[in-house]
Amino acid sequence: MVVERYHQVLERIEQACQKSARASQEVHLLAVTKTFPVDLIVQLFKAGQRDFGENYVQEAESKVARLPQANWHMIGPLQSNKARTAVSLFSTIHSLDRLSLAQRLEQMARAAGKTMNAFVQIRLGEENSKSGLDPADLMAEMQRWSAHNWQALRLVGLMTLPPPQASRPYFARLRQLRDQLKERAWPMFVDYQLSMGMSDDFEDAIAEGSNWIRIGRALFGSR
Image (cartoon, rainbow, N blue to C red; front, side, top):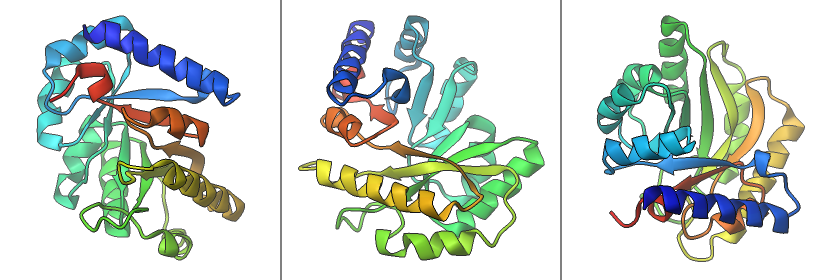
């Protein structure tokens, strides 16, 4: 069943790309595996899926050990005291939301001799429970970050978790922020991808320029 859903999602991605006149290679599927068993993840890997996202470091450890050849992404909030483990497990962090965490990841990645990719998370809704930088502070905050020496941490774009209803305007806003960042050309940004869109709204996210869509329920069913 999970493989059937996987092919259905791939078809929806292809259709959304065609509708938006985008190349399908620009859009990457990130399978969100939180709470789902490793056996289902292995089925997806055998079917061709390579990128998987986890919300919690502790839960990810056993899954990464079972499937180390996959590309693992951290998509949940990350505590600084988990940075060392996160660097050992993940290739990309989608939830970087503060300078102190960026510095910790830089330190741990250097010590491990590893390059870490990270998306800066932006809080676009009014939900105080969500992590992320205030968009009004983004440019000033990135100017502050640019004063530091980044060797192992590479910023690759922006991520957001908008409110579940009427999310498309928030996707458009993140794209606008990304375009403003590109104009500044700060050297710690090596790319300007967008991580946005989930099971209920990923077609809209693709239309607004998303490069990474984070899909759980449409692949695995309800938790």
